[in-house]
Image (cartoon, helix red, strand yellow):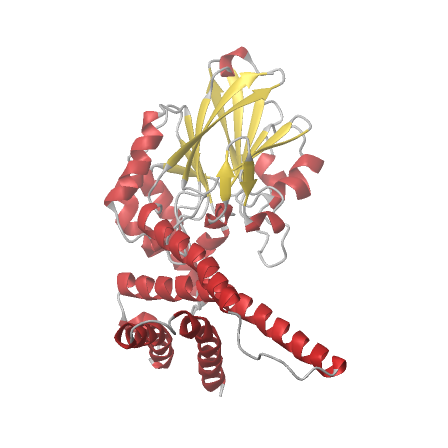
Length: 406
């Protein structure tokens, strides 16, 4: 019954959107018109066939499955705008009809507005082209974001400290391997003192990272690479037959950080001696103020023993942790490094002019540098992608933060 309802919804939605294409093609030559109609209906029937095919994810390889999902996603997001304009036209026609009935007028033209149908198609073409371009051009278009962070009473030994941050690699989403190496080259070109990875190495399963171990193990930093876990790293989004299997997956994931040469911190810290000054790197497990994400993090435990450090830096995957706990209860933490949002992989960024993404309505701090009092938060836009295999306006990020005295 649920399957029948879903198929009915798809057909009704496409039948409604088809009205705009029918109006557009009215004056075309018959052969071109019927070809356009056939091309239009190919997508919904392919989607219905995919729905009916039991377990398509198990029958198609990763590349084919991703391609199909992407085509359906782009087409139906675009059709939503078309349907929106058709709905506006229907409201116009209904309002006109009711008004004429009350006014006693006999004349009423029930035909659709060609202008609104064409406007719907034109507006639908915008996300279609943008999302398609985002898949073709931007998944591996790694961009370096630079920030200078000025910290009051920063010890002279830490002046000019260079920190590279990456986050949300999501190795399970990558369709290509060689372009990913470019991100590592970009990281190493910065000659960082420290590299921080702030969670989500995989989508669901630890084995997703295996093909990329020989890529990310090439990251180099003077004082080491430090990492934490994100919400996707715990295996919570997979249906496990046994608790033992989930635990084995988790242990494998942790061992992969070691294979990469990354120092994974699980509610703990590392004290580094840098030219005679103590630098505390605190790594907390995933902690979110949003109820849909579990709270594994224990910041009090993670920060224990760092009281004498000259500078404290926190790695916490979810930026909502900063506003809920860090700025209230741990005001001696100078900078928090987060990720998680991906900048929603969609938005508009023109430096000095506009910075917008729909994710801002969910996360107040969603990309870039934020400050409250003397404390800073940096939210990385993510190195990989999840779901939609591309980016529009929000590029995959490598961050370089340089510390300077205030």
